[in-house]
Picture 1: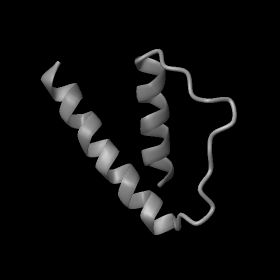
Picture 2: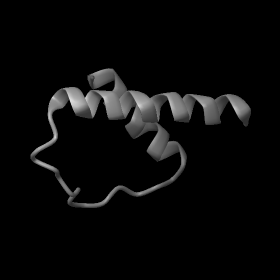
Picture 3: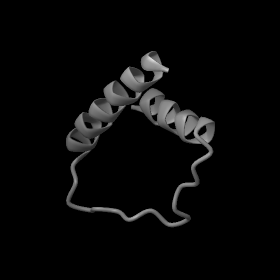
Picture 4: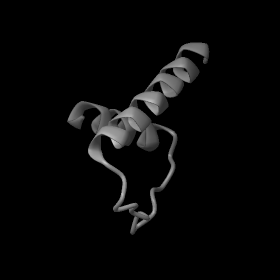
Length: 52
C-alpha cells in the first residue's frame, strides 16, 4: 500500500495539483476498501499516462 500511496503522491505533484491541507477522512472505511479504491485509481492513472 505504501508503494501505491507514493505513486499517487508523485502523480499529484506531476499534475501540479494541491491536496487539501486537511483531508476529509471517512473513519468507517476499512483498509481493504481503501486498497481496492486506490488500486482502481492507480489503474485509471496508468491508463491516462499511457495515452499521453
